Image 1 (cartoon, rainbow, N blue to C red):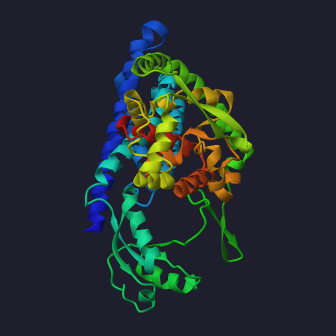
Image 2 (image 1 turned 180 degrees about the vertical axis):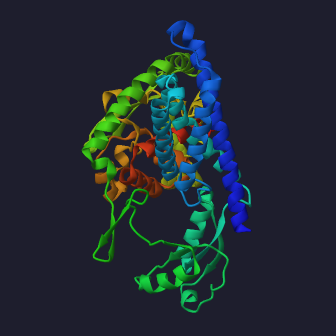
Image 3 (image 1 turned 120 degrees about the horizontal axis):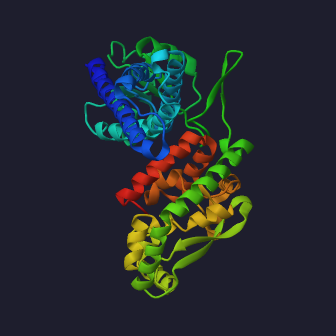
Length: 453
């Protein structure tokens, strides 16, 4: 039954990918012919392109399948994006080679393939994310796993499986560690086992038994909040070593991000300038006070800077806030835990809407261009929060804070202050271009869904 379900899921993704690739080729051919009167060049004849398109779909499905994207169980969103980007690039390199070496395809414009590749890099992963988000809500998605662990840590793993439903691993049962030695799982039809020991027991002894009964065994250990997405295994004379480091501490990573920040910051400011003007006028008409709000935050190297936002609060906001915290113990407890209030009385009518769609943060693009902030990065913490940051401070404040980031799209206001710190460190440790691209996609989803802070 599990094998049949897996092929159903795989077939859904295969059909979707084939349809997307077909649509991309059709769209690019149409756009190319529409632009010929302005740009010149040879028109695209669909009969000439169709065989190359069919070859691309066939090769693409094969490459995706080899890279484990069908059905894609066990892949985090960032890892799936990385594999898809590399697979799509390989497919279009192959098509470019075929078109260069094959006479019937030599008349096909290189720009046609280049633009098709660019669209595929964006649309195919987006299609996968949306489709996986939809079908992961159904009971027939995923494969069962057995969790071997004891106490609260085993239940923590179960909770993680529930939250990360896109992984496609749903808990079938939880068994104690001793069940491995006693052979309670023998004869099971389940392929995946999660081994979550809480003590320094001899892992290899249990691993041998588990691997005789399960096709895939995942070892999960209680550990510090270091790298996990891009951790590299190292063989040290038969001993398992795990290489991890803070990816964003590398010089090339910081330069890459700075170039991205300048390009994206300028482009977004130009594109959004009409919206800026409209929002400024709305703020003026909605309530008395300045259009912009400046607040001191902690930046790279503990340097303080003024963050720029659209004003969302009343002029006497701090006085009202202090009075509320003194009178309302529930609100005071909520603020101490989350450093935010769900129903903040300081917000103006327009301010609530701006906060909901995160539009109040758009002026921070100016901070990005100045170099005080990055488009993606850790949260910009308040100076008053420095002591609470503890040991995390030296790591998080080693780089620029971000306009958006990992905790903003994965947790938002539902996370505690401690969880935000851990998620910011996770981002710094696991940073990659694919991770930033995923954050951009998630940011767009969070903003349009109105799940802002």
